[in-house]
Length: 60
Image (cartoon, rainbow, N blue to C red; front, side, top):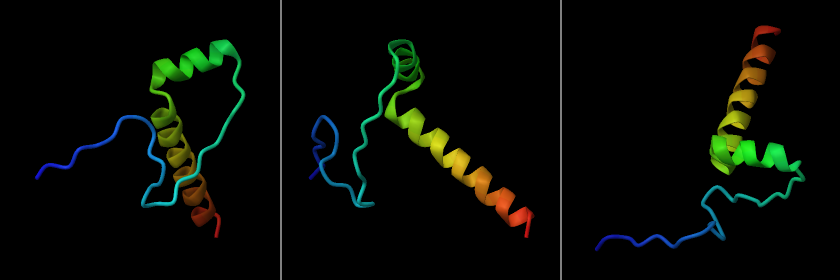
């Protein structure tokens, strides 16, 4: 039987995710929505974390 996904944000995730609230100016908030919202923020954060990890590895 096919799994039915509920609409909206997940209450609990396998990774143990946590909700955060950020204040953004209206123009910045609109741009983030255009770029993909929370998914875009998550992708950019993972890229930044990977870049920092690579820099730390190179400096050792």
